[in-house]
Length: 272
Image (cartoon, rainbow, N blue to C red):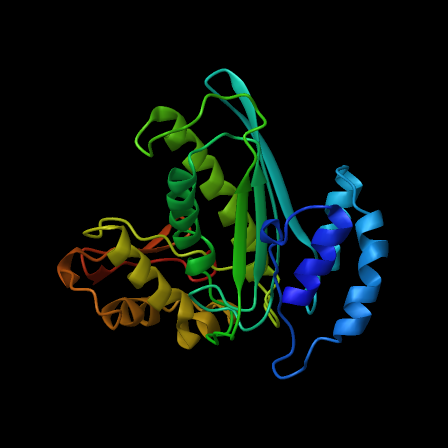
C-alpha cells in the first residue's frame, strides 16, 4: 500500500499524504505489486474529469458486481449550486457494518473538516451500515468522502445550521442510493427488501429492529416465496433485543396492513 501510494504521488506530483488507498478482493490472495505499480503511468494518464471518466472508474472497481454503481445530485444551498457524486462496489459478504464494499464520494461544498466528518459518519450509519445481503461480514471495507470547497458557498461551520442540514439530507440520499444499489445487486438476490420502522424510542432502536427483520432468513424466504407471513416479521422484531409494547405493534407489507395493535388483520394474500 505504501509503495503504491508513493508511486501514485510521484506521478501526480503531490504528497504521499494526499493519496488514499482502497482495496478489497479474495481473502488470502496477495496483490501483484509489480504489475500494479507498472500499470500506474497508464492509469494516471487516462484520468479524466468527464462523465465518461467517472463511469469508467465506477466500472473499474467492480469485482463480482453485475452492474456498476454511481450517483450524482445537485442542490441549491444558500443560493449556490452544490454537487455531490459517489460510486461504490459490492455485492457479496455484505452485512452491517458495511463489509466487502468500497465507496467514494465527493462534493464541492465547503465544510469545516470536523463537521464534514460527523456528517459522513451519520450518513454511513443510515445507509451502508444498514444493508445486509448474506449475513456475512468481510475483513475489509472503506468509504471515503471528500469536500473540495470549490462551489463558492460560505464555509459550513456547525452541524446545526440550516445549510448543514440541507447538505446532510443530500449526503444521506446519495449514500442510501448507493447502499440500495449494493443490496439490489447482492449475490443471488432476486428482489430488494426495504424495512421501515416508526415509533421507536430513538434512531438507534429503530435501526436495530430494522436490521433484525432484514437479516432474518425466514423473512427473506417468505418474500422470495411470495408468502405474506407476518408472523416471521413479528418474530424478528421480538428477538431484536429492543423492548416494545406488543399491543402497539403494527405490520404492513407495502401499503397493505397485516397487523394492527398486536392483532392480525384480514388481508388478500394474492394482493400481498
